[in-house]
Length: 234
Image (cartoon, rainbow, N blue to C red; front, side):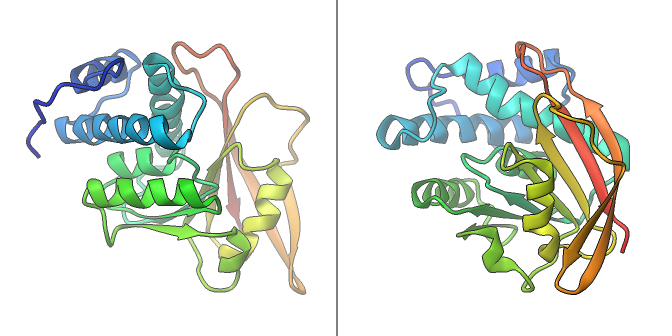
């Protein structure tokens, strides 16, 4: 993929700055991945000026909260569970595409469904997918995740600040199957998390085990970040 030489919009970070910031944070990216993520930030800023998708409009904060936060979580996830090549991922409450769009850029051999019920955010996600040439590999499912119950199952289900842990699992257990992983990006831990969670799915009891609870260090971000990884056993 050829690098664009077009200048960034006023106040935006150029793609070399994106690559350098990621490298300084310990995230190694290929040139193509830097291009994709830089293009994503350009599109986000372009839409944000018209549609007010996010209150975060300072370029450095966008880089930290929309890119580095998701990239460091992806590194922690693959470090904990190994390769995720070929996995079908559901990003629930995808919003502006964190982590779904960001992970799709660095997981090119995996498929993604970006589940978002707000119309303007779903429209933005479709635009990004089209502009980045991901049609067929990355799909946008506009609507509530409950509309997918019993219709699809995923190997990995993720979210960032979508709901509390138990609510997140309850709303997504019906799109899981034995072996499904959950990777929840959460902030401060409000209470102890049980190592074994039992949920009801119709008349069936589903057993989910907590595998990892990983503190994340995101350079430039003072707020707490954790990645919670769970696996469905039965």
